[in-house]
Amino acid sequence: MVMGEPRREEYKIQSFDAETQQLLKTALKDPGAVDLDKVANVIVDHSLQDCVFSKEAGRMCYAIIQAESKQAGQSVFRRGLLNRLQQEYQAREQLRARSLQGWVCYVTFICNVFDYLRVRPQQPPWMADSLPPKAQAGLLPTATQPGALVLFLPQVNNMPMMALVNPVYDCLFRLAQPDSLSKEEEVDCLVLQLHRVGEQLEKMNGQRMDELFVLIRDGFLLPTGLSSLAQLLLLEIIEFRAASWKTTPAAQKYYYSEVSD
Image (cartoon, rainbow, N blue to C red; front, side, top):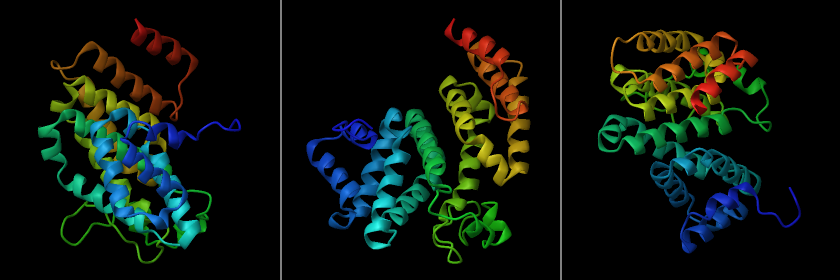
């Protein structure tokens, strides 16, 4: 980073009002001085309204979690963030019915959080091995709602993000339903998130990825309802996974020239 150049987190803060900007800047530098539950709610609320922000908000969340851990060895912000993600996850169908943009922003945000917070250098790899097998696969449900976010893994408190695996999958499965595939916004979101976190998700639960791609292939073959762009995007992600989550030079030339045209 060039001397005097603001960090990427600070660029994203510019979209907030002055008071909220100060709250977020303080959370990044001195998290113990602010209400971190309020900070979590501010970030989630803004992510549901601004899809550009939701694409990179996970970086800000990760920075605050790191700052809090170094300062006090606590995880108040992380718990608040997971609690709020759970609330929105449980109401995801209502959110989709109320606002398609809000739903797409939510999926983008939860995938972004998963991408940044799943396993980071300060969490040694052996920690994942000490989780129960179902927790390693992201399969632990809550007692009240199967598939809901598990907020606490008491065996290893530093790895709660493993619990995001199934909720992220559930969101992607919803995007692969026929009524969602008929909407380009949802197809675009599905493909973008698979590009971002598909490989990691498959490593954590390959069976669910197989099931997801059965839905995607079936959707691609729908006789009606898919736009030509949606068909192109679905075909591209099918071939992307088939190539071990890599874009071949031929695919790069074909798909991206088609999209640009």
